[in-house]
Length: 483
Ligand SMILES: C[S@@+](CC[C@H](N)C(=O)[O-])C[C@H]1O[C@@H](n2cnc3c(N)ncnc32)[C@H](O)[C@@H]1O
Image (cartoon, rainbow, N blue to C red; front, side, top):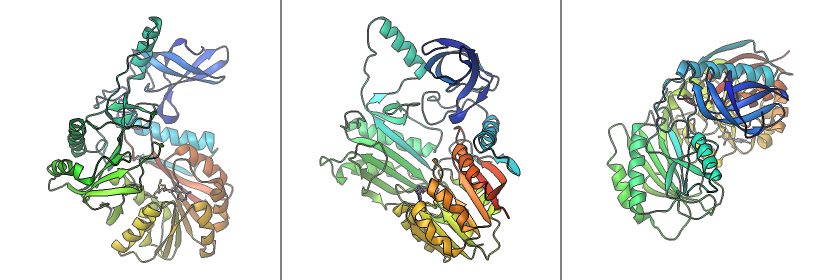
């Protein structure tokens, strides 16, 4: 097997990032071949695109026999869109693979066998569960990898290049692509209302002939579109992100705002329509220059019995109903009785800390994002929670000052990269009886648990699925201090 060769394989299992795994015998012995979009039981021809000593990557050029597990995906963009990768498996199979992935990560990366690995908790909804989608604009359309490789080879054989199809595209990045966009008219992840919003916006942008921003030339106007929708509150935010320019004023958007408001119903109110400008070259959907076109700069969402204010760029769990399941599990593992001091690290808009505050003596939360901290303070006041303090800054810099508070329980919910090594090394110094680690990445969770397992016993671990139709999964681990 070498780069450029085509091999026929059977997919044996699911691997990291939800790719199909096959083992191929060649001159290097057994090589693990990773095939995106292929699932266990499938037989396919694979074009090898990368070959290293022990592993190889490829793209499926032909499906020889479908897996008995394969079902038909409801979304027409499935297979090319980088958003969902698992719509072609039943939800029960998705849960099985997520659970296995947690177990294998703990075992292989963390060398950990928890006291109990409890069955994964499913998301209350399998589709239309997200309270936020973030779309990108681009000038280059994305084509399916399989047809792209075949067409490019055919063009090369004729000494030609693939024809350019530049224009205004709005959707998700194509699988593995930095600037190519899968132009979508609907998405199964947020709601039918979000799809109607998309239709109205797309028609307006086309009518006004607004150019998309190009990630290569850094020219153009339209950059991102973020639609947030409080699933329990019914409050909707539409945030149009553009390049900075003198050419347009807030009045330019008035007809669009009027059209959007026609989509309102008893259960959905446009409380926030925003225009955010961002001139930097980085492709991040963030801005400090926000103009309110209608309503206010934030929306509220209800999780459990609490209301939360969400600013345009603050982190908020994307599956509201799933977040209730997650936070209930965190509360169960924390098992507070009213007298405990709790430290909540990587606290976002303060959701977990507030969920725990009614059963704690005091909660201290630490979060890097100043806007999220400001929202968290508002949220505490809004919900009448007095026994919580918010510290704005990096955990690795700020957590040490909480050493003197002698917390009984530490709750952590870091980003995908896991904990900063300095912060991780500091944790045992708190001598907290219990740590509840919430993670959206089983591999970094396993890495961090291995470090913590010198001082803590990993008692219970449980997956919570917050992201159906994708390979992502949330995991909660309960750690008890060794004597
Ligand atoms: C996975 S989110 C968890 C948020 C919150 N616990 C929740 O459930 O909504 C991770 C949070 O960590 C914050 N963060 C990232 N790096 C950080 C750091 N070095 N120090 C403090 N907070 C950080 C992010 O801004 C984000 O709000």
